[in-house]
Length: 142
Image (cartoon, rainbow, N blue to C red):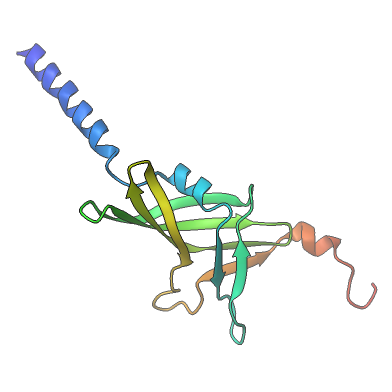
């Protein structure tokens, strides 16, 4: 009896492990895929969109918040909270990453910021980096 239960447990683990491959890309894969991608985001009133092109080393964090996988259409849409940092600023927001599955695997098709949503006017929050602020000359020469 114990052998049967153990065998069933192993089979379930194998099935769960194999079915995972049918879902879309992992957070680590998405983190790599956004490098080189460009998107526009809003961050304050009266400003048009700002452009950000993700460079190597700028993705500090990426956490998948929601996933919408359509196995029939072979698509996967990830809503991922990201933190991107360059020398001057850090931006935080949610990117929508759309993937399509081909025989060679998943391919990133598009990247765009998710709307700020109810109660939030802007899609991304920006923080000026302290190091950058301190290294800039004061506008009045002080």
